[in-house]
Length: 156
Image (cartoon, rainbow, N blue to C red; front, side):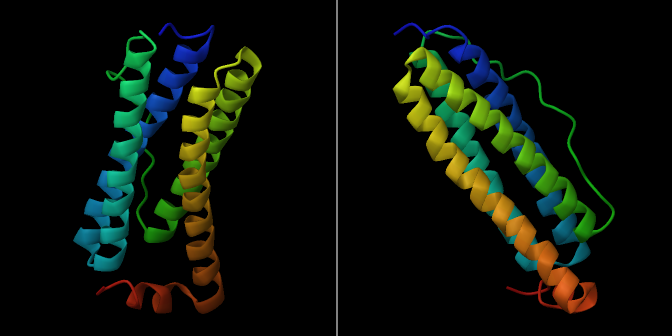
């Protein structure tokens, strides 16, 4: 099935963001593990698995639409020197991803590709859950303090 105008381009933009997220969350899992925050490391590993699933689904769908998945490039990975810096960078990243997904969903609706639109709507649900999780963690840090928050992240 041939992709409607602009759909493959949007899908490749979303794929690039999802692949970037895989790299970013792999790094953050490793950093948290190195810093001794086992619970956070496991959560980031869970995010990696989700983003790999999104990437795989996008690749399959691009191929289904007779497009070429562009897997050779990722955006710059956001990192930090503290857990709080990781969370702020990840929150910004997820918000930008949600905005891209909204544009792609709108475009798919405009050109009448409701199958792709539905797939992207499923993806944005996870993205919005990620936004909520990062906002919640930052709010917890603000309310109870960084030291108390981090003490809860040492063991699962």
